Amino acid sequence: MLRRRRNLQSLAGILEIPQDIILDLPRITMLGNKQLLVENHKGIIEYTPSLVRIKLSQGELYIYGETLTLGSLQAEQILIEGVVQEVKYDM
Image 1 (cartoon, rainbow, N blue to C red):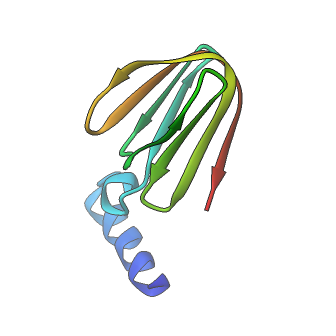
Image 2 (image 1 turned 90 degrees about the vertical axis):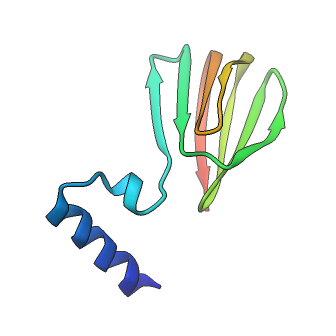
């Protein structure tokens, strides 16, 4: 599995394709501590005003904060708004 992953990374570099596309990795973008965009997710596991847990291809993403809301929910991306205090990636 590790060798296959390295081969895919090399192929992505040669073809100049972003690794997140080849390796099915999430892309996480933050705008200060007010918005967090998660692309290439696998769904929401838990949602409360203080915690959002998101399933990823490899593990889970935990977003802790205050007054967290889903600004946008699409098949490939989730926009979380509120006061983001901590982001944890758990394999």
